[in-house]
Length: 249
Image (tube, rainbow, N blue to C red; front, top):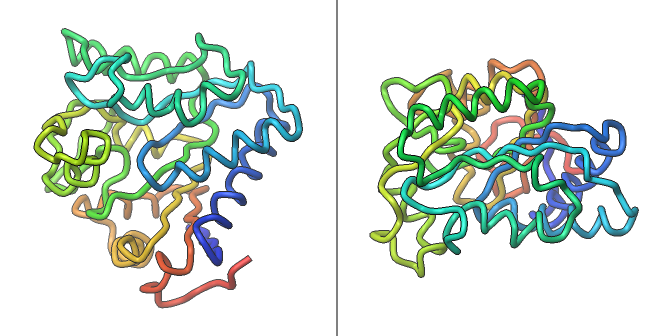
């Protein structure tokens, strides 16, 4: 995996925003996979600013979000759909029919997961997938375990993951749903290019395990080592446990 280290989280966010703007300019029909959580918020802020600065036409790109809480509706302020609208889609001109989310209120979960996989295939696959990194090594909501489910699926969230998402639920981890829907690792690994963004000292140990450790379902992010076009974008704090450090841009 290629590693890029930036001086600060803000520098990493600016760099990634510039990269995505360049990818959209080169391919106006780009299919973009998107992540949620605290880490990508500065990236989305920079992306909006850069799109506006160059008057970038985003109307023909297609997006797929990685995951959604089970039992949370699209118009619920705690949903990832609302999160994405607040931080990105309310500010750029992506066509609403090209924005894809999992339905956390679906009555047939297996059918919903199959629908999402079909939608990704019909779009021609994901060109560029942006990922975050959970403190326990998860990407999307693919939690550590003895095995992983390959495709979009229902998952039971670990306590650490629920605590990490408590901010969306008024700071109460007990209010975070126990289950979610998520793209699977095979779905993620079939994307053409992956950029994982991780910042902060709390991610340092997990970054080292993912980049330099063995392939293991106990650290789902380690499976990115199998991808031929995966990049890890870090700030100095998140990179501090790596044994070999490239120079910061």
